[in-house]
Amino acid sequence: MADPGARTIRWPSDRGGDGGDARAWRPKIPEQLAEHLDAVCDHVVKLARAGGVDGTAPWSLGEVGVFGSFPWDSYRAAAMSSASALETLGAGQIPIVGSRPMEWGSRRLQVREGLGVLLLLGMCWAAREDAIEGTVWPHVRDSQALGMFALGGLRPDVLFQQNGAGGLGAAPTALSKTLIRRAVVALGLRHALDCEGVHRWVLTLNLQFAIPVRAFRAGGLDWLRGVGRPQAIEYLLGEQALGGTSVASESLQKTWRCLREFVRGRRGLRETVEILKAHRWASGTDWEAMLGELQGARVLDDVPAVEIRPPLTRSDPLVSIGHDQADRWLVGLSVPPADSSAVPHDQLRLLVGGRCGRRAPRMRFIRGAASRVGLEVGGGRREGATNSR
Image (cartoon, rainbow, N blue to C red; front, side, top):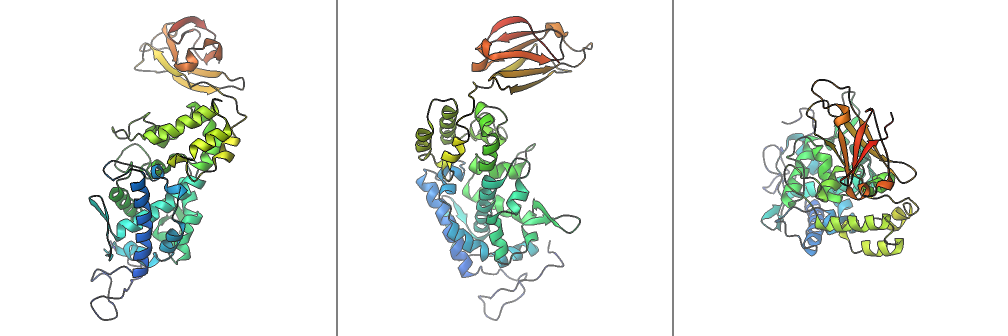
């Protein structure tokens, strides 16, 4: 539905005359913009083919090294020349056509797909470099990558929503979402756009690069220990299925193993950095600086798997896992007051598995509200574990 207050864009007509109402005919994209979009899409497609991707199976931009070989010149030129096309689409979703659609497997990348690829690249770059969990869109909106659209004269409200007070909000507009969806589908990328119960648009961005640089500096050590990893990493490592379907990446699993071996002291900094140079997921990141910050950190074993036995259907206890400064995992157990439907506290058993669990001396005590809870470590039972509130 067209915005009544929006400016009507008039384009040069290829049917004679000086143009006309853009709503009455299909305008042709300016040749200069078409060339820049072609260059951006061509760069991405060439990297994908060089990485062994043919578009038949879901893939990610980072999987083929896009962020280590970012097409900045073409991106900048396309972003700065796209204002008219984006404002035209934003005003009424008017179809526009390009002169040179690009073949990608059985798919065709035309103008709106090209604009979507452009926007997706900018948003992913910004989210990868600057965003932290919970504040992705403000960082994307204010990034240098998205600022290039504004330098070309694009109104900011075309790509990001305005809030009720008239100021600029951070959420992407319907146009931005439409273009991103077209790009994701056209390229055959991994995405979460059809999944329920997740932040679909943010997760779709994160699936393209997996490891956010700024957030890794803050929490990467815990992630490598298995604590608090971002959803995208969990999905790409195959730890969880997305919408019932695995989106695991074997190449990211190799990159993650390399990082874990460094944190566990099995490889030195220089050796790790050299290995990562051959990993496309790791390209475009200063790993020497990033890992240098983690080099003096203490090494913990894998996060223990914790299971309550017998399983409870009501009044389930809450289990939390952390670690202390002495390199020991802390397993916290909070048991609600006993009632007729709950298993008596003295009959609960807490099974702690995983590598850490098999080394009982590395375990501290069970902390929680129960007065007496049995503890099993690595399948062997220890009665009467110490408890504290």
